[in-house]
Amino acid sequence: SSAASDVYKRQSKTAVNKTLQTVACNAFLELQKAAAAENVTVWMQSGYRTVSYQTNLYEKKTNYYKQQGYDDAKAKEMAAAIVNPPGCSEHNCGLAADLNSPEHTTLDTGFADTAAFRWLCENAEQYGFILRYPKEAESVTGITYEPWHWRYVGVENALAIRASGLSLEEFIALQRAD
Image 1 (cartoon, rainbow, N blue to C red):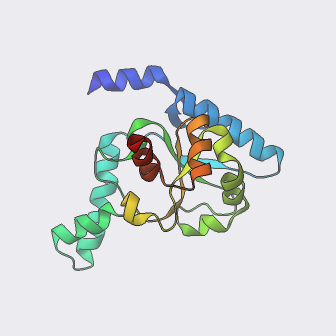
Image 2: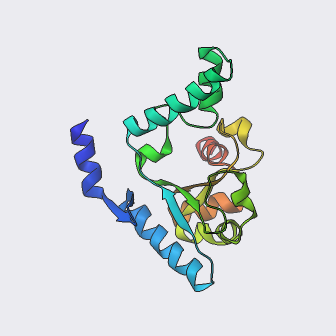
């Protein structure tokens, strides 16, 4: 809706042509500066996405699998494991960012072998970010391992989630159980 879009525009800030909600963007810029101080470059490849943009990504991935010979239902299921269906992407809330570095500019698991990823794993929670889709959490998150996808949850939550060793879903379930 245009009202939601207007609210987002008022609450957002741009970092090198990539937009996040202001609180997340400010945190990312601080994270980026701290990494640079340690000679590590972290770039944001993707931030906020409109639902229509997400629809386009999802339809392209679905069509890719259909061209591989899968029926529509299976192609959509396979696409959803890699690209969230429209309206279901964390990128739509302006708190998620796909990160990369000059070492590895594509969004794939090769990013896990970079200095930027290692730095993020050691420091991102201090800026309020968590690795959103960790390795071996696919059965809980419903999303394949994405070392490039980081989510702003605030410093206090990020520190607690990191200390717990849990995925966001598991952490929330634990909090609800208390």
